[in-house]
Length: 356
Ligand code: HEC
Ligand SMILES: [Cu+2]
Image 1 (cartoon, protein in one colour):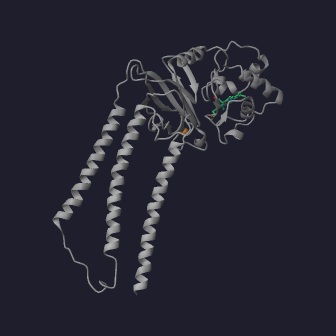
Image 2 (cartoon, helix red, strand yellow; image 1 turned 60 degrees about the horizontal axis):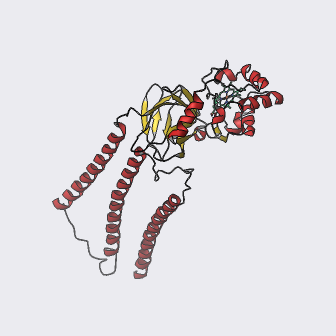
């Protein structure tokens, strides 16, 4: 009998140690991943915020984690204590434990303390939500309309007359001269969600509804994001890049984007192929008869480093493959394979490469 109790006891301690080691391991791994994250932000981390809304959310989550971690420690210690102290043994195997019927003190304690904890968590969360949602828009703010499409992002700068896709450019914002970017979020088809973990929380883009969010990145560089709401087959390949530019670089980018007509006319054959194919029904290119809005605006295609919402690098080979068969890069994409002859395809790609 005594032998049996001993082994059960060992099993309990073994499991408890196992759980603690596992939790410790997870925390350690998270810490290591975080510490070794490359500086180019290629791994978007919610623990590495670079903009006020993301910072507030990160602080809040650390606060909530600390409180719930403390609760976990207290409960787990009490549990371990009870298991050790009151385990079955020969000495007390025939005795009944003390029978306690109702204790006002204990019941008050386990009602009031949790209520206080929940109230504190609620107030802390409400404060952050208010600070982010009701932040006033300064006159210096850049305004962008982001429209979610299956499976790419359209970005419009109404005040600047710029239209682009998938790669959002915003100016860096410092506390002396804040230039936050305010985004108006719309959807052309279904529910999407705009999420750049280092810059802000997620906000959905819902058809027939206007949502909003803002970011004020404090560091230049590329920040990666992702559509965070399942929106169809290629939801996973609906990435987004935010390029946070220095004020000079941002002005230079605007200058280029504002030139709505492409003056490079070397590739006449390719341009003819483009203008006489269905491309023009879905894509717009400034200065041509192409005014489609179903697909990304191609006027400054070469200004983007990726195509198809981050699914591939913007290289000649990938452009050719994309136009020949979009499904090879992004199965289920809403652009049809255009079935062009090799000669037409080559000319077309050469033309696309003039769209700076
Ligand atoms: C039926 C509409 C449609 C037609 C026709 C069409 N496209 Fe597209 N195209 C799209 C859509 C939609 C996308 C975005 C796909 C995605 O990222 O999921 C796209 C993406 C692209 C891209 C990548 C742009 C970027 O910045 O990501 C290029 C380049 C392109 N199309 C070129 C062409 C060319 C050239 C033709 C004609 C030979 C053509 N397309 C015909 C709908 C169309
Ligand atoms: Cu989406």
